[in-house]
Length: 281
Image (spheres, rainbow, N blue to C red):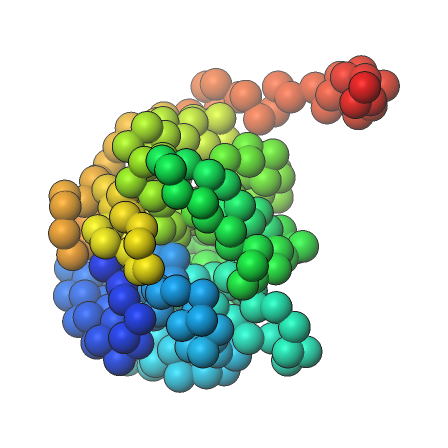
């Protein structure tokens, strides 16, 4: 299975972002990719008021466009994430959608962990605009005669290994992490966290990212990456707009899991909460 991570510098201009994404998706398809992953908030990245104004339903123009690209090119697309306006009109979601080669959305994941932090002298309060999702999501994707279970996550989720362990135990062999990682945290943690999630779950990791200036006053790290189940970096994007591709050797993954059966060697009976760990306080 051949996968690709697209790296963008999205802005508050949705038409611009969609045009650039389409151009790169078409270029990736010509390079033989079966699955193309776009980064977090690829269609619109902006200030809170711009995110609210540009939020869409899952049948809106952005995902309609991505579905049409998938259908016309015969490839699967991970539509990174968009700011979703739910039917109930409450706070928005940060939502990732997996679209199959027929242009059908087969899974939607709403980011569980909100990025409410203070790093590099900057305060980030994602929960002021969006609310967390509650559902852990996997989906089965067919490519070149193989059925591959895909686990969906978004950006800050990367810091919560329990989410990825659950995805792996549900059968995920490919973990997707569309992101807009900050330059401060990305410089220190992006690569080690991606490799750790790959190694501990013996899974491939596909992590497309935003790079460069991120409105209203942030900076995204970029360095979109594809990592194999042994923690080897198969591809890493240089600075700037573009994409990287990698071939996922599923037989090699099976060999790793058979020879070093860490998932099978788990002892969940020893991990009980709170009896073994102790309640807080």
